[in-house]
Amino acid sequence: MNRTCFFILLLICSLQNIQSQELKLSKQSEISIITVGPGDVLYEAFGHSAIRVSDPVIGMDNIFNYGLFDFNQPNFKLNFTKGKLLYKLGKRPFQNFVTNNYYQKRWMKGQVLNLSQLEKQSMYALLEENALPKNAEYLYDPYFNNCATKLRDITKEILGNKVHFPSSFSDENYTLRQLMNKELSWNTWGNFGINLALGNTLDKTTTAEEYMYLPDYVYQAFKIAKKSKNNIDVPLVLKENVILNFKENKIQPKWYSPFFVFSILLLLSIVITYRDQKRNKRSKLLDFLLFFLTGFLGIIICFLWFFTDHSTTPNNFNFLWAFFPNIFMAFILLQKNIPDWVVKYIKFYLLLLAVTLFVFILGRMNGINGYFFGIQEFSFVLIPIVLMLFMRSFYLHKILNTKK
Image (tube, rainbow, N blue to C red):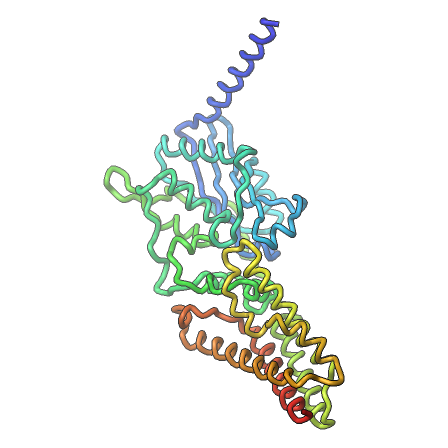
C-alpha cells in the first residue's frame, strides 16, 4: 500500500513538473493578436479577435479564442434573451483555426506583440490559467465584454501603465450604435432587429477604448499603440503579417429588405385607407394587425428593458411607436361598438408618433456628434412604419370621432 501511494505521489509530481516545463516559453516564442474578417451570418458580421501563442522550439502553436459558445448548452435561448449568455475561452491548434476561416473565405491578419520574455511568459501563463475548465466561462456582453475587449483587457493587465492605447481614432465622435451601423448595413433585418431591441446606452459619448468592442478597432488600436520601454515609447506591435488574404464579406440587403417590405405595407395601408374613406368605413383587420403587432413589439421592448440583465436594452425610445397597450387596443378595435374613451387613446397615440418623428428629425439634424439630450438614434427603416401608423391612427381618430 505504501509503495502504491509513493508511486501515485511520484506520478503527480512528474505531471506537475511537465506542466511547469510546458509553461516555459523560449526566446523564439511569439504572442500575436489575430484579427479575422466578417463572416456571412449575423453573429460573424463584425469579425473576430483572438490571441496566438507560438513557439517553434517547443513545437507549440495555439490559438486562445474567447468567442466560443454552445447552441446546445442548457437554456441557451432563454439565457440569451435574459442577458445571461455564457461564452468561454478555448484553446486549440492554430492551424485548425486557420483552416476553418479558410473554408469560410474570411481574411486573417496577425500582429506580433513587442513583449519582453517575462511579459510573454506572464501573458501565456494568464491565458493558460483562464483556459482551465473552472475559469473558461465568462458572462458575455456584445459591447463591453466580448472576444475583442478581452484582448485589450488582458494586455492592460499584463503591461499595466506601460501600454498606451490611442485616445482617438479619428476626428469623428462615433457612438457605439453608429460604429455598429458602419459594420452592418442599415437596410438588413439584422441591423433593424438590433436597433429595435437596444436603448440609448448605445448613443452616449464613446471613448477610444470602447471602440475596441469591434475587432477592426482592436487591430487599429494595437497597430498605433505604444509601450514604454526603458522610458522610451516604442510600438506595441513588432511586425504584422497577412495569414489569409480574402475579399471582405458583407451582409448585403436582400430584395425583401426591411425598408422595401415596410414601404410596400405603407402603400397598401394608403390604398386601404383611401378605400375606407370613400366608403366611410374602416378595415378592422388592418387596424387589428397594426395595433397587435406594435403592441407585441412593445411588450418585447419592455421585457428586455425591465426584466433582463442586458446592459444596452434599457431606455429604449422605440416604445413610443411600439406602444405595448396597443395589443389590448387591437382586440377592442375588432368590436362593432367602440367605447368613447378609445378616441382619446388614439389621440394620445398620435402624440406619441409625433414625438417619435420629432426625435428622429432632431437626431438627424444634430449629425454625427451625438444626439440631442442623449436621445436615441432611430433607424431609417422606421420612416415607412411610423408614417403608416400615423396615417392609419389619424384616420381612426377621424372616423371614430365622427361616429360618436
